[in-house]
Amino acid sequence: MGRPVLIYGKSGSGKSRSLKNFAEDEILLINVVGKELPFRKKFKFVLNSRNYKTIKSQLAKMPLKTAVIDDAGYLMTDKFMRDHSAGRKGREVYDLYNEIGDEFYFLIDFVRNSLPEDVIVYIMMHENMNDDGNTQLKTIGKMLDEKCCIEGLSTICLRCMSEEGRHFFKTVTNGQDISKSPEEMFESDEIENDLKAVDIAIRKYYGLISDEIETNESESEKNK
Image 1 (tube, rainbow, N blue to C red):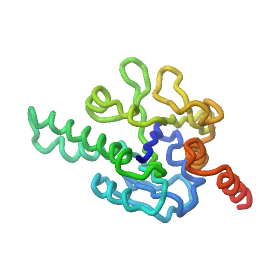
Image 2 (tube, rainbow, N blue to C red):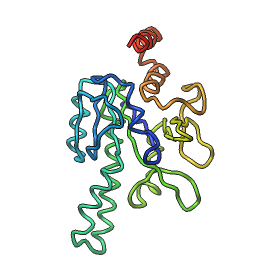
Image 3 (cartoon, rainbow, N blue to C red):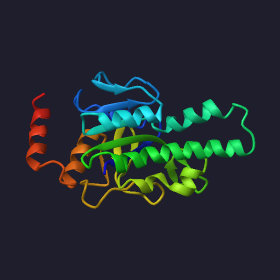
Image 4 (spheres, rainbow, N blue to C red):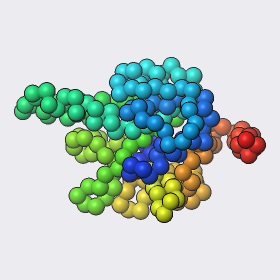
């Protein structure tokens, strides 16, 4: 059983920026919109695709333990923009929203039920404020919000935020967003904008790496 982890926030809050401390050959980056990263490092394993079948295939056969689907929400946007103006009417419009919801749900379900236990897939999405003033994931249609609840499919949802030039993750909710993480996984309610450090903390918490491995990696970073 793989582990989907949701990373959400406003545009420019530092979602992609959080990848910069991963080694170039350490992750599979699935770049849904093909955008450039906000730092100089180039990753070795990159897939530019909006095709669910292609993404699942690459996740299933990748030789790595960590993958990132950057701007995953655009998987839904792309489907909507391509199909909504194709003359659909009545029931066909309803079916389109169902298809959008189904495909995204089953992508997360694939991560949870078809990948090995030690594989973590970070799913990056934009946030949106609902009518009640609460912050949630930005989706298309009501199915994922009202019928599914995407964040319910993941134990860890980290909100990416930026204040006065400082980028950070929120690990617990303030009562008006969906941030959450297991008790004692992270040291505080706000942590550095560093997905590599997050990855280590998650793997350590679930016993997927030893303290010795973590220490060696930390020493390696210091010596760079």
